[in-house]
Amino acid sequence: MSLGSPSYITLTQAGPSVGLVWGAVTGATFYQITRYEDHATFTDRIEIGRSTTTSFTDVTVPVVVYDSGPPSTYLAAGWSYTVSAGDSGGIYSGTTRRIEMVRPTVADVQSFTITKP
View (cartoon, rainbow, N blue to C red):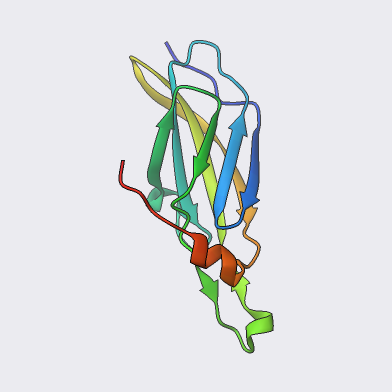
């Protein structure tokens, strides 16, 4: 049996993290979340987590800033996220959405922590 894709994904930046919320897929028992940077290809995406609910917070977003001149012109990276529905038969096609990250503040970067699961 094949599953459909989430009908929508909403992305929200909170400092150096990104929150994802998506539409439920009938029959899905979990969702796979993948991420890739603008300059990468779709095949370069990495799995950043799985969820049994319709939300996920990516706290491992790399803080990438492109230096193109004075600090006031630095740009943060854009990221694309794909959420795919899964069940005991596998993982199926997903829905992709892109977010242009707002340049993080010094406080954002200083408050960024990583904890091992």
